[in-house]
Image (cartoon, rainbow, N blue to C red):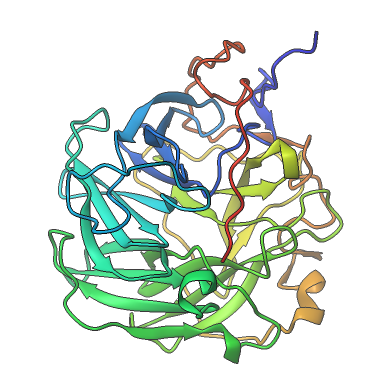
Amino acid sequence: MSRPWTADRGDGTYRNPVLAGDWSDPDVVRVGDDYYLTVSSFGRVPGLPLLHSRDLVNWTLTGHALERPAHPEDAEEGQEAAEPRHDGGVWAPSIRHSGGRFWIFWGDPDVGIHQINAEDIRGPWTEPHLVKAGKGLIDPCPLWDEESGRAYLVHAWAKSRSGVKNRLTGHRMSLDGRTLLDEGEVIVDADLIPGWFTLEGPKLYRHDGWFWIFAPAGGVETGWQGALRSREFFGPYEERVVLEQGRTEVNGPHQGGWVRTGAGEDWFLHFQSRGAYGRVVHLQPMRWDDAGWPVMGGRGRARVRTPEAGPAAAAGRGSGHRRQLPRRALRAAVAVDGRPAGGVDGAALRGRAAGHLPADGRRSTTCGGCRTCWCSGCPRPSSPRRSN
């Protein structure tokens, strides 16, 4: 009998995937010394599983944020769905912490964008609130911008419901996360970016004076991770490819989230589609190059330097440089230190590659294959395929 997969090697290093079950569309947030992750639950009930870690490698399921889905027809708060909906329900949630509360936004492709929030990760969570109604509204991500005191929302589109895809729409949002303050406008039209298609899954951040959108493109099985930045939320944005398969075994490194440790290290969690094995989650080291762009992945056994304890380290400054990246140039994109970004000639993206635990990480207990908690060691059914 084979042993359950364990990412933690027990010697201060880890191997990918850090979550070897089916955990689609992960997003992550750090609050103090704790990391919290949630994923798509589609039509499953309860929905929005919540995972906890102290080191980004060992994860434990702590509960669910959504006890029942909103009604698919009228989306009235507190209503229950009459029956499960394959290829529907909760798509690509974003989790954030602002104003002393946890916030989760997600898109239901048949209803619109919902939001719930709670003071404690264990709940109680508010009833789902419909922020924006409409067909094909998916992958929302909020941002409470501390620099301006304003709030924003970005989302993608599902062509299967709306006839639209490959673009991102942005809104101003009320600080309570309940109301959009404008009609919205397209802030990224990827039809205008050579070689880019099926842009989706945006995650919105503010860093070093820029608005950042991390978003995958090119399809789940064959795509890449892009980064877009602008001095203004509504654009214009410049783009780069920052993570892709290259010569590794990790096909189409798809959407995920950026998190900074208390020690100032940057890490990126993303999923890889493995067919019947589901969408497993990988952890990649991340840094910022001299032009201020994120560089994800790297050489698998290169030790990550342990920073000194104290405030998070300052990140590199952006220069405003832009470089067009047509599809044919992806495998040589953003060369750094003599190797392509994303570690395409190293082991960091390979399924059994070793990395090193985040410097401020503390180990937590993981399941030993109990088949009840749906952790990385337990089998669970694979996600229904999204039809964007």
